[in-house]
Amino acid sequence: MRAVEPIHVTHLFAPLNDELIALLRSLTPEEWNAPTVAGAWTVKDVAAHLLDTELRRLSMHRDGYEPPLPPDAFANGISGFVNGMNADGVALLRRVSPALLIDLHARYGPQMAEFFATLDPFAAAKWSVSWAGEEGSQNWFDVARELTERWHHQQQIRDATGRPALYDRYLAPVLETFVRAVPFAYREAEGGPVVLRIDEGVWSLVEGKLYVGAAESPSVTVGLTGDVAWRLFTRQKIDPRAVVEGDARLAEPLLKMVAII
Image (tube, rainbow, N blue to C red; front, side, top):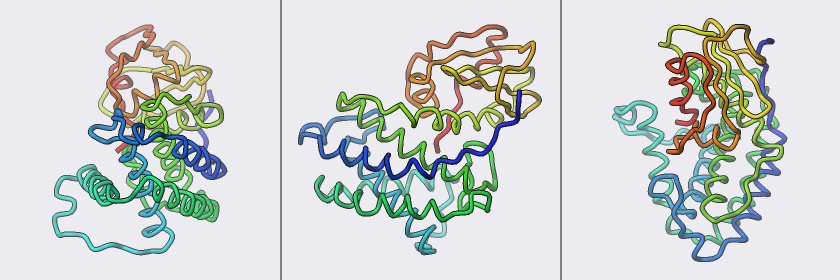
């Protein structure tokens, strides 16, 4: 085993945005209104959400703009605050045409990619990665988290419209980011070690710390395919079809783990 290392993904934002634009340009009017697994959001709503988060990142992080917030903004915790912002952003962009959404993604997607490339990966991030239990994160983790958001929402559009999955160079770093939630998922569990196998990747949780590679004499080993793992960790209600060897009780935190807000 070896310690997990930082994940550097800034080079993936520009090509991922190009893929998104090509995807959106290929959609028919009917496909823009197709339902997705993202709650009540349609394909257009998911595309709008991606634009909204892009604009927020550039406004608040790059430009240092802090929008006014009501006194009770965090009354329902960070998740409630984020969900409220997401809902407001999508509602506002419902008045924007698909053509304009595409144009805005083409304009601001590259700007976000360029901004991420300017960040010191080991400096303190503006936002911590709460689903990993961190109260303070480094930029590399915040940026990797942003990649998982942009990738998995594009996958939701692809699934909803019958387009091919975009795995090649993206799925591996997305999964490598998601598994950083494992220690937090097991914060109240007793027992171990726990070994997780996803396609060719292997990670182990030993005494609350995550490692690359398989621990000796694990209490449980859980095997997932990459196609299932990313859906499971982003709250899709699917059969995990997990291969569990050992203490099935210790597999439960992993199979209930969520790596999004």
